[in-house]
Length: 170
Length: 156
Image (cartoon, rainbow over the protein chains, first blue to last red):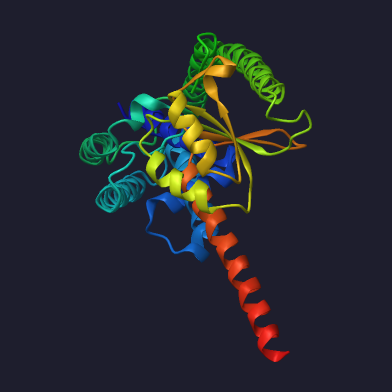
């Protein structure tokens, strides 16, 4: 149970971390598109965001500071819900935010997704708070999250490569 | 701990697959760019960024005014639209080269910018913010110039 939750969240933050760090210019533009951060702080806040995600990957993989880590993630999710609401109020343009890399089916309904994540984390706090770090070793969590990340990357790229044959540039 | 070694094998297979797909993706991008450069409106050694645009996209209104006003960075705009709209935009966006997407045999779904540089190809999806930044920089520069010329004129 705890291993499953750790794997899910480690995967999510690893995908998002890799997607952001691969194209820092674009991530800065993404932070700008939220419309909350002043222009001169854009680069700094992007670096802070990426660092937070990396830290969360490490925390979820190792399974230490279970309680504090869950609260921190919930706060982060609430913050993102707030940002998305503000963004939607400001501009009625594109609804999808690319908070988690390029994977589309997660990014379609960001608010619902974040609420589901918060629910999972709350169960994690109340169910498995005083357990030992993992039932399995943290190597398992690390490897599983790497496998899932690679799978999602391969899936996205395969879709692009296949879609090009129909002469659709997307 | 047998499952760890199984996972290790899976990771290596997946990474090989990933590298193969990345190579194929690069080849596709290179073919897209070379196809654009073969177009008569564009020269072969053109290093401008390429902006893919469709008339169905939600941000067309914003991009329209931004493209009309901005001339700091010049784009090759591949526009997927009816022919009358393409010719209208060709007259409107004088700073940029507009290419009719159907001439290349394409249908464009999503808005994005492709930048070609020595290091490789970068793709930008947040086009509106990118263009807004360009526009802001350009406006600042032009304001400075106008102000300077006006100032010197009053002095002399």
